[in-house]
Image 1 (cartoon, one colour):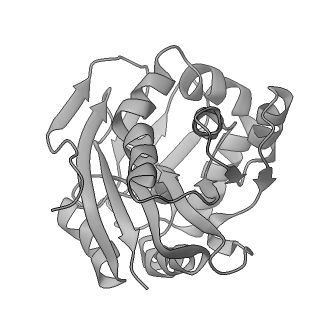
Image 2 (cartoon, rainbow, N blue to C red; image 1 turned 30 degrees about the vertical axis):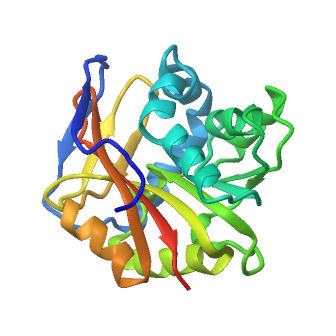
Length: 240
């Protein structure tokens, strides 16, 4: 059964000036990952202004991912710490903290982290690669991973999800957002500056990644913003 959640595709009509280019490859290269990280670090101010904290961005996040995740934590009486991976300047973490949750944020961009600290976010924000987390086992009752996984090699997804299982408590909650598509890599160049590369996966493949590692999917949804491939959001319980 699972909790009630939306199963249709919402389409946001907000326009942007990004250019989406699909590449004839099915996985990211080391060079593309490095370039993506440089883009986020070098253009952090523009990214925060034009995307993460633009008018209406938090409301979209709350509708599609954040509030369903937080309500699921409450439903399952999960009151421990919540990890936000790829947290950027901490927009979603800040809202979760405002709602009474105990949050920790990590991101590979030190510039993004520092912007969050300058903005007054009191929760811990750390420069850390989610693929190389050094948290103890069972540290978190929830992990919120929105979009960041799209910048990870497909061949590394199983090991990443296993590390999520390790730091999640038994019965802990995972919200993860894939980019839905035919499996090709795509890149964007937009007003924030620089190139960013993403993987896409099919709905079936996204669900299989979680199920094969013992996650129980209790909610799923899809939404599309602008001209980019749709988001595919999965809410799952960690079964150890």
